[in-house]
Length: 349
Image: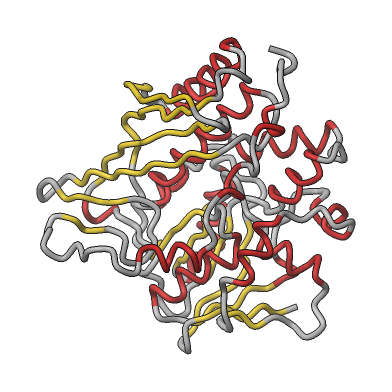
């Protein structure tokens, strides 16, 4: 359909991965979560905020499971479905696995959203699943006060292919596979300040599947991977730093940005989630002196369906970067490195 019958974003208090709870709130909620230790087959649980759970079936097979859903970040229902599905499947790729099937998660205020709009959301999600080579094998739906859509996704891999966010090594180079600024674009879109070219760029980024994660898992030079979503680049990088007990250095000039991200950030198109993210980092992030707020906002900007953050052997970084670019990720860039030290992040200019 060419235009939505209803503005989906007007029905939700937030949108995309900007809806996620702040990192500090999530940590508090999980503080009393039962330990997974009694389950020896559970290789990855909630202990370090990894992207998906991993259960080892036997010596050759692991099951990887995730779920992700959110409220509309755009008004076009087909695009909303595509973005939400791409975002959910990304967790499987980030763990080094291959997705095999998905289940739809749907919540809709049916008194406000026509059936044909809901149908377009589901079609968008199904189209992305088809592009990933998996079926939407079922799902669950409820009548909800705000529109919600996403997927539960199942994947498979070999035990040695599992890539966690806590297995980074000192000296590793850091590669980011997508440009950042999606939250800033979405804030501008809500206020009618994002043009057609900007919208097209945003959709192209948020619907680009992170398939390269599956192939990277076969390379021993790739030590750790996570995807950058609602906690912003700093938030997800900090999870890697804390999990690996290392310090990260990120080079601000090397960060790939969406074409209009700087201009829009300077004009104040910043999401509320960006501020919540920053307040959750405590004193673990050191920024350059007198860094403007708009630049800090780029670092904390919530990325809906963002790229992968890859930690790899420094000597292989340029070769791996070229592989990532050749796989269809033209914005990929080496953005920093890991080193021994107190877990945290230092941003340099």
